Structure formats: C-alpha cells, structure tokens
Length: 387
Picture 1 (tube, rainbow, N blue to C red):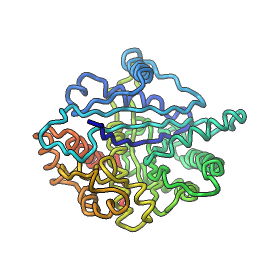
Picture 2 (cartoon, helix red, strand yellow; picture 1 turned 90 degrees about the vertical axis):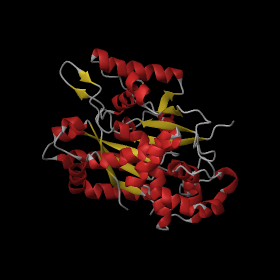
Picture 3 (spheres, rainbow, N blue to C red; picture 1 turned 120 degrees about the horizontal axis):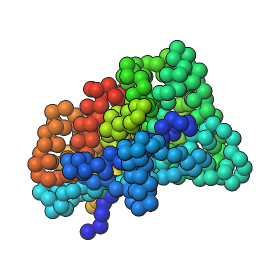
C-alpha cells in the first residue's frame, strides 16, 4: 500500500549564539530517550543516518559530558524527520482516507547571513539557495535570545531593534533573488512566531509578559518586518508576523551540569508544525483573506491535504482521495475543515480518548497535538494569534 505521508516544514531563524543548534539537538535527543519511545504513540527518526548520529551525539554530549554542541557557521542545513505511528495499518477505526504518516523538515538558516556581509558570489548564491529551500515552510520561528535580553535589562529595545532590523534588511536584500519577474510567492512562511530562546534565564517572564515586552519595546520594528514579508507574498492579508509568541528552553545550564530534562516549549514544535498551519489557513479562508487559487495551494486536496488532516483530526472514515480534488473538492470539504479547525475542549478530548482506545494512532496523535497547544497556552508558554 502506498504511504500517504503529510509533510510539514518549519524554518528556524536566529542570530549566532541564540541557541538554534542546542535546540535542535535537544528536540531530537529527547525523543530518542527510552522513556519517550516507550510512552509515545509514534517514533521520530532522522531520515539521514549521518544526521541521526550527529544529533544524538550532540545530545549525549550535553547530557553526559556537559558539552555544548558546536555550531556550523554560514552553513544552512535541512533535517528531515519521519514520524511513524506505532499502530498497525489494520488497527480498528483507522481512517483509510487520511494521512498514515507525518514528516517534519526542519530548516536551519545561519544567523550570520543576517548579521554579516557574505564573503563573495559563491556564498551569496548559497544564501539564496538555502532560503529558497525553506520556502515550503508554513511556520517560521524567529528566536529572541534570552541571554541578550538579560544582558540589556532595562534597555531591551537596543537589542530587539538590532535583531529585527537585521532580519528586515536581510529579507529585503533577498527580495529580487526570490521573486522571479517580480511575481509574489504563494508558498512562503506565513506564520512567524516570536520565540524566546534560553527562557530559563528569565524565569519571571511568561509568554504574555514576553509578548508585551516585544510590542512595547519594538512594536514599530515588528510592523516594519511584517511589511517586508507582506511584499514577498501573494494574499499578504493572510499573514501572521509577531502575533504568535512562545517560550523555548533547550536545557537548564548549571555550572557543572546541563540538565537536558529541564526543557520548555520544545514539545510544542511538532504540534505547531503539524496542526497550527491547518487551523490558521482554515481561519483565513473563512475570513476570505485567501483568494481561490491561493486557498487551493495552501489547503491542498486529497489524503495529505487539509481535508485529509481534518478527517484524521475528527476520526472520520470518509474516503477522501477520490472525492476531494482541486478547488471544487476544497469547497465541498469546507464543513469538514471548519469542524476540524474548531475542534477544542471536551470534544477534542473525547475524540482523542476514542482514538486511543481503538488504536487509531494518527487521530490520537493529531488530537494530542491540539491538546498540547491548548496546554501550552494554559501554562503560559504559548500565545496564539486570535486573528
């Protein structure tokens, strides 16, 4: 049977030293721990054996030897992770029309390319090619370095304005290379999450206070960044920049020990990549912010499109591939999409419990992801846009 694998991309941006390498190693290493593998409904594995070894090695270096991973300067890398359900395909309640596997592609964009001039034409082209590779991402994480905020306590605007201006100018410098004949892009990261890295250094700063700090100290700079990004995309009203916020901490760094089990927010990255774009795209479609052709491209069709994801979230048994194709199919599935996008609270937990009982692990995993996002908001780790 041919696999129906839904692929989601996330792009991670941050200045050098902001914690991208440590975050990736901690994110992956935690899911290789025996306890996680025992309790989880799914397995996560890097599709490249070399990347698997390097990431686990970096994680174990932190865990066992108090050694921080080395960073790769001026080297943009993509990491592909397969998320495979543990249940057998013949498990009761399995939806034959929904995706049966997930894949996460993590794009790491070097911070130096937003801070320093490139060394020559070869590096300039590599920078463009690296950025083009992440254009399929729906979610981008823009890291705000907690150490830098701590160092400039009381004058945070100096760091924040520098950070956002560098990203603003960096994107502006890439515009002509990204837009062929000036034609705006349909596929481009449309959800830009402001993420506080090294959040453990600022224990009194919950996500609400973090968002208030950024808006108070650098609201104009966030608007400027939004305008640059809006100039790159088709249907610019369907865009969220500086409206979503989260806290991230890859580990607790003590004098003699790196506590890798003391993490914040990393368990929300998979849920954000898997289901946040879906709920946001459906909402934008409801608000008529997405023209028909753009809506079709973003929502997709068939088992691995938005309709397939909606069916999996609801535990539906509709056969989607033959029924829902192209824009007409998306229109026919509107009720299904709306129901899935609104799924929350008691009904979400009921569907999750039923899916677990029936060993329908795709539905259980996706509804579990939605529950994780709700929990993240209750714990003041995540703040999602209401727009």
